[in-house]
Amino acid sequence: LLQELIGRGARVGVVVSGNITSVMAAAANRQMATLKVCLSAPDGAEAALFQDEDGDTALSVAAATGSTAEARLLLALSA
Image 1 (tube, rainbow, N blue to C red):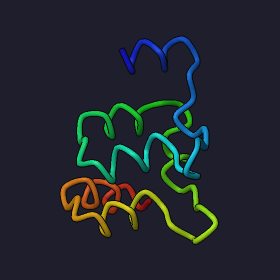
Image 2 (image 1 turned 90 degrees about the horizontal axis):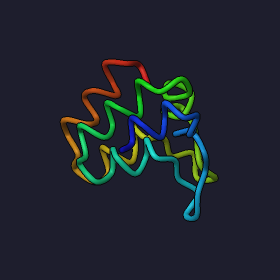
Image 3 (image 1 turned 180 degrees about the vertical axis):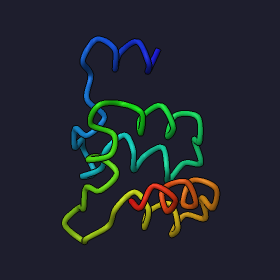
């Protein structure tokens, strides 16, 4: 479903309630498959670099929540 939505133009970098993006939510909730789909979206790399008002990014949120595999993926992408 997510891939279909992205294919129809949905953006993963949209900041939603709680000041997070889809990339941040996937990283924080140990959703590796979802994170990979989000990162492959046209705005995925930009969304991975988004910083909230506290300066948190998808990488810092993944690290803070113990989402080790997701943090490693983001780190490998230099997010």
